[in-house]
Length: 33
Figure 1 (cartoon, rainbow, N blue to C red):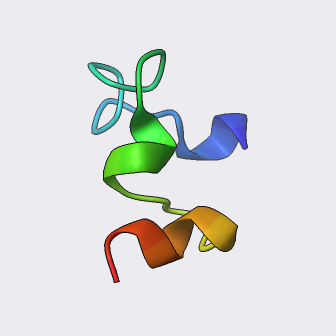
Figure 2: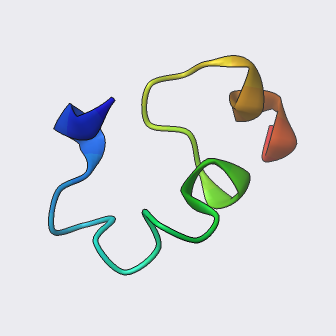
């Protein structure tokens, strides 16, 4: 998943990246759907 940890997520990748948005479309995607 480190592929998605780019400059766009660098500010939140270590806090709640998957809680805000899940770029890899896993189970967490339903959080914001």
